[in-house]
Length: 437
Image (cartoon, rainbow, N blue to C red; front, side):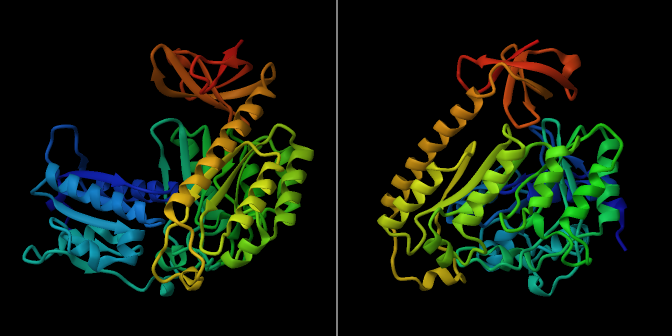
């Protein structure tokens, strides 16, 4: 039993790193603390508790986590420092040894954070509470509102794929989810709180239903049946789980936007085999063609990893040619990072850091060209834009149904509203298209 009287008027500071799932979970933790009397620290105030929700997808992510811990410790030297998330699950002792850390909570323990704060032993530094994530079956729902207009709804957690380069199954555990019924109710609650757009988030979103005997397509149909005026986006979905049924349904949906984020990781079948991915380039290419056939203006973002062990110069060139052949809108490029406990470390061939950067630069340049071409095909077309609260100079920005960034003169009454507009030419910085009415 929590004695919430001890938390009245206590100040808490949050720092979240990594994916949108982490931000959704931090939001859920923040609500727990707020309900028990905590208030969020303001600039210049001293926090009583600092909570850092970490990422561990690369060495760079780990480094950023350590930097954040040290910075918050300097800013709030008397605060209870709590570190949780993927880095805390994978390397708890490494974090516990950092000066100023009081509590290290595993991925499952983060949702009982109040109990651990209440029971903390002040004489100990780096107290660790971490269960083996592979044994965790519970799904912890969460939903967050970003600093603009979107809500991120966590619909799934964990992954059963065990790709050779990835530690996510070790950090997040097995694939699991809530029921369709409770997920739809969470979406309705977000709408009641003012959501105009909800992004479905997960570790392996398309694997929804694994723990409840349901499936992702049925979730999509149930959400689409919500009568309110709401836009849905799918944060990311594996190509082998993006069925032609789902694509055809989204093409005719009023609620689901023509916007896809699909991990490719490599355009070489040989490298995909080394990664233990569950599809081929042929399947991937077919998915892109299927989307474009029924939604010619759909935005398609694609994840790619460069420099994995075993990716020779020849295989990279092969992958590059394949990626260049795709009718896609943007690349999200990641440089490979060795992760302890992964099977890829057993592969002998190593790509130097210099070569990884070269390959990354090539794909970033290609991505810029693809995005420019995609935007310019849409100039003069009519679309609907959800305007955001951010203001730059005298302008505001919003995103169209198919995720085109649009800019117009700021008008407060348009914030968090959907407006039908005509897309104009580029703004001066070529970061958005102008809004023509």
